[in-house]
Structures are given as C-alpha cells and as structure tokens.
Image (cartoon, rainbow, N blue to C red):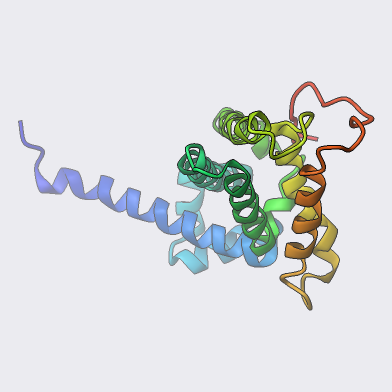
Length: 208
C-alpha cells in the first residue's frame, strides 16, 4: 500500500530538521566548544529550541550524535587504508587525518569525560575505531616498519596527545601539529629503541 504524500511529509521534515541541527551544532561546537548554547544552535539551524529538544532531549544527546558521525567518518577512512600497499604510509595518513580533524574542532577535545561518551552508540563507535586502528597498526608491525610494541590503542591516544601538545599555540600556528606528528611517527619507527617502560591500558575509557 502506497503511503499518501501528506503522511510522508512530516517524517521528511523531521529528518531534514535533524540533519540541519546536527550540521549547525557540529559547526558551533567546532568553533566555540561544548559550552555553546542550545539557543545559538537552534538559531543557526533556523528552528526553535523546542525542535532541538524534540530530537535531542539533552545537550549530551546532541553531542553524542555528532560524535557518532565523526567517529564513523574516521572508521570509514581507516577501513579504506587497511589494504594500502605501504602500511607505514597508510598509518601516517590515518593519523594525519585524525589529528587534522581534532585541530579543526575545538569541541572534540572537550567531550572527554562528558556523559555523551557513555552512550552505547558512541562507545560502540570508539570500539570500532580501535579495531580499525589496530588493524592498520598490526599490518605495519608485521611488516617491520614500526616498533613491535606499538598498538592501535597507543595510536588512538597519540592522536589526542599531538593535538593537545600544540593546542596552546593553535591560534597563531594552526599547522604546528604537523611538526609533532612527524616527531611522534619517527619515534614509532625507532625499531632499535628499548621496550616501552609502562604497560598498555586494559581498555580505552574516555568517560572520565
């Protein structure tokens, strides 16, 4: 049975409003961080605050939806690189993409410890991300182009680490992170270095 156009319209409008909200919120969080108000997000999206809360009951629900999309993009990018001919170049390309995203998005680094990261979809996305990064790292390890004690979890943590190192100078030197990524990656290639002195965490927990 065909659904009448009048019945389909409200659902289409709701989907469009949701996507406009996500786009407006992602832009606002990237520019101003997670303290941006719901009122400003609603204004950017061209909707009322009530529409925001119908789709996302709390700000953390909205942040979680944005994080889910961003992590999904990183996972998709990593999967494209898994079969690359040069595993070291593939791993470096993935790290470059990830840090570039963090450097351009003020809100991303501010979500650590927020309840939004405890949501099942976001936790599932983080787990998928770790799996993909481990696959990239494992190929590089097995081909002997990075040190044998580097893991995917190390790489995920290093993404934020490089970003945080250069964050205080980001306003005047926004590309400085490239210098420290190169330094970090050279350390990952140091095959004759001593074994790392501290064990890997059991799991990555960004919920604070």
